[in-house]
Length: 169
Image (cartoon, rainbow, N blue to C red; front, top):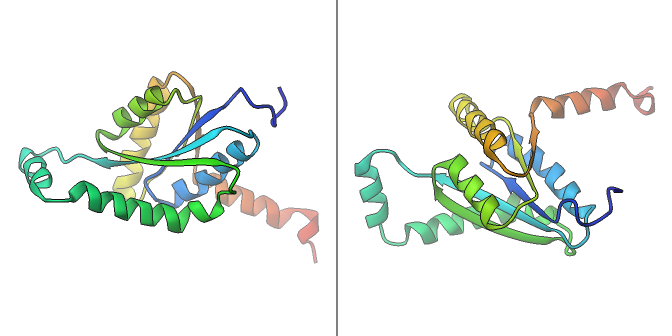
């Protein structure tokens, strides 16, 4: 099948925590969607549900918490991803609250996703550790293809571009 043939990946799921690695991984999701006319590119952000019962109770008592979260996520999507998406790409945004890897896998099943694309590292040292574990769990348990983009790959691409003959003085 050629890279422009629809059918292999008709539903692509890009997972973001809005880290630099996720932003870099989005290029791969967008490229995959642009090469497959008619495919759907889903963007999913999972808001981790607090483990402590106190915080669970508190979060759900605050009026409009879901609406505010939705506005904040939409704002980030509108600033970071949406401007890069050509009009011909069917671009859909969703968010979930809960255990990150479980919500990703659940969403992928609900939407009958063919390919999940995500970065390997998250926001901070803790985020890197947590998102790395999320990525690992998604890769092990997904029933579809998973493309994991390491952030180190961006540096490698930049180094290769700098060494290519076209950049020689």
